[in-house]
Image 1: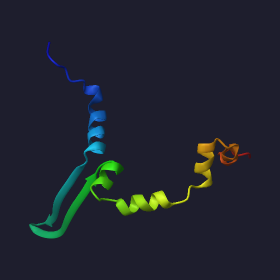
Image 2 (image 1 turned 90 degrees about the horizontal axis):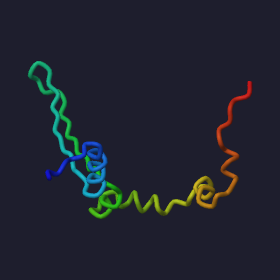
Image 3 (image 1 turned 180 degrees about the vertical axis):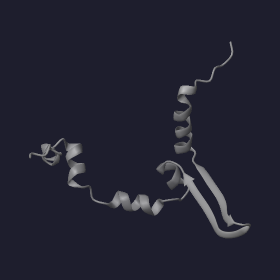
Length: 95
């Protein structure tokens, strides 16, 4: 029996690996016109889940600041099941 790769789950597996392990992308781009370099661009990006990013020391200040923020009333209503949040739902316009 030969193992088969299920193509339906390829995207899910890719996202799982990116969030768990992360990836670093680096690119150098030079825009030229008539063989004259006009613009140089250096791009660097790190893609990972927040747990992986903070484990490697990236976005640690952002994560700490977000966790220190007080919860909004809307967030508290979601967790407590308070009916106050229903007041702010969009309603059809009455003409």
